[in-house]
Structure formats: structure tokens, C-alpha cells
Image 1 (cartoon, rainbow, N blue to C red):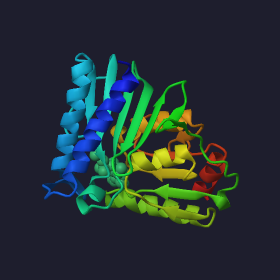
Image 2: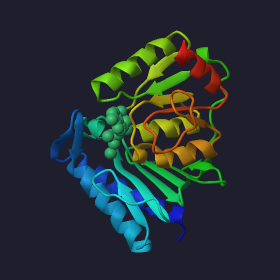
Image 3: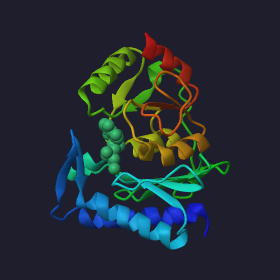
Length: 253
Ligand code: 2AM
Ligand code: CA
């Protein structure tokens, strides 16, 4: 099986686990300031690891619930449940996010929304798909027409800086959305349902997989200050590419 086939199998297994637990009593713990973890995060991670290790026992795995790997060879970068706060509230917007890094380069991305059964998948150089259909970013030309999403940093100083950026942007764009899963939002930019997305405090597993999907759908990613993007950077601005320079200008005004 190829990397992307295994990633899809793993994402579906984790998604089924999450769906099955959603209506049940849940175990919700706080692992940091404003940062939750549930039984579903851990169970979904177990599903991902079982599928990946079953097929590729020698690959590294870096995953949000405590799994670390070096940068050498092939490394799977996993968010078993992106949008844990939503999941804990039963707000139906969360996803499983999988990125595969080979010798430092992102080569495969899969994001699965188990509620809507939407599977976003991309292989570097081979395009991006949603349930098999080709994905393309929006054609929105002007910032004033842009539907821009964001999620909110947890740490007070980062949140205040982000709110200031939001205020600067507010006069230049159409309006804002916030769904609570960075991975899903980035896929929505890839699908053309959103024109842009930004965040200032993400983790590698939130963006590694979605970044491949966005790039293959024609989108652009930079840091929030316009610097070159890397999946280990905390900030990101994702767009349909056409809007990117205008949004960066608006963020600076
Ligand atoms: P999580 O649900 O897996 O923790 C919400 O802001 C979105 O950003 C979620 O996708 C959340 O992922 C992610 N996120 C990661 N780090 C964050 C942080 N420090 N503050 C806020 N959100 C964070
Ligand atoms: Ca998570």
C-alpha cells in the first residue's frame, strides 16, 4: 500500500472511533491552560498508530498526545482529533489530520471530517481531492469580498495580538468565520469555501497534512508576517493565493 492509501485507512479508522464515542459519556481533562484532552483523542491516536505501524513499522510518528519522532526518514505528523474543544462540547466541527514528511519535505496530507464523512487528501504533485473530486481554491479577487476564518490562541498575550490583527483586517474584508478546527478550516480554503484562514499559535500536527492539501489545490501559505512558511512555525496565513499580498498589507495597516 502507498503512503496515501495507508493515511486514508488510518484517518477513517480514527474517525470511526471518534464518531462512536461522540454520543457517549466522555472523559474530559485539562492538559494545559484552555487546553482539553478527551478519551476520544487518545483512542483515535491508538487507531492511527495501529494502522500506520501495522503497514510501516519503521516509520517515525509524531502525534499530539505524547508521541515524538526525530526529523530523519519518513515521519507521520498526526493530530488524532483537531478541534477537541468542539468535540468536548459536541459542537460538530472536528477532524483527524495526518501529514507525512519525508526527509523534511511534506509529501502527503489527509484530513477527515467524521461527522460529514468528508475526506480531503493530497499527494505532492498529484493534486488534492475531496471524496475523489478535484479541489481548487476560490477565485475571489479582492480582499473586500473575502470570507476569512480564524481560530483563537489560548495564551492571553498571543490572543490579544491576534485580536489586534483581526481588528486591522476587519475593515478590509467581507467578514469572519471561526470553526474551531484549524485543519478543517485550511481544507475549506483548499475547497474554495473560505478565501483565507489565519492563526498565530498552531502546532505542527494542526497544519502539516492540511498544508499539502492547500498547496495542491492552488493555495498559498506564509507565516502571518509574510515570512516563508514551515509546518513547525506557529503562525500561518493561508489564502487562495490571489488575495495573499492584499491580506498581508491589510494585516500591516
Ligand atoms: P486542537 O483542537 O487539536 O488543540 C483552535 O484554535 C484550533 O487551533 C484547533 O485546531 C486547535 O487544535 C488548534 N490549536 C493548536 N494549538 C493552539 C493554541 N496554542 N491555541 C489555540 N488553538 C490551538
Ligand atoms: Ca488535537
